[in-house]
Image (cartoon, rainbow, N blue to C red; front, side):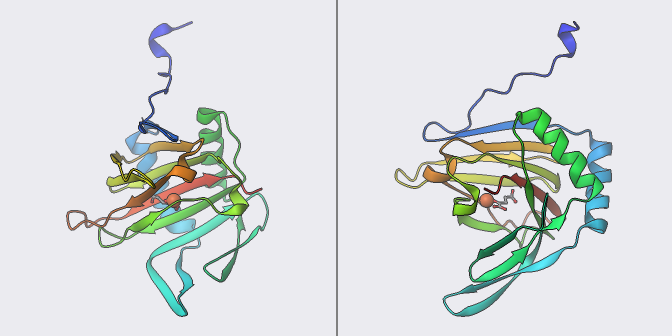
Length: 201
Ligand SMILES: O=C(O)CCC(=O)C(=O)O
Ligand SMILES: [Fe+2]
């Protein structure tokens, strides 16, 4: 056994209480992450996200896509979406993430932020279709962006950075007790792709 070539055990929790967030850092080399970024840009069926919020039809600047083991249907903000079937690259990334986290996932929500003008407001991924205390594994490619957590009761915040080729895992009661967001920033004018692997129940 090569003791110097072992993967470090990721047991550091970014959250002080009420959930578990593990940041695995750069899991994928720069070269490979660059390749994934270009391939995902080209092969994913990117669409502007639609929602009906307080009677208004909203179309986001950010683009999204949804892939899975099956053509799952999912309704949120009164818009119904259907999952597409895995592309070869998404399937390879799913296997990599499953191996690192010892968890299985059956779907993936993808986000494309063209630049720092685009972000995501505070929310929890606590929809019924995800079940309680679900694990969500988030892979990032492209521009490094800040990522924040805010506790629903104490309002305490935790901040981290999501690097090119990195993996972040949110699990246990994280979605019950904490919100998360990707803040907009004037400092970034390049694109970021994010993949969140999830388990639909
Ligand atoms: O872009 C990110 O890192 C987070 C995306 C996110 O929170 C979500 O899709 O629910
Ligand atoms: Fe989220």
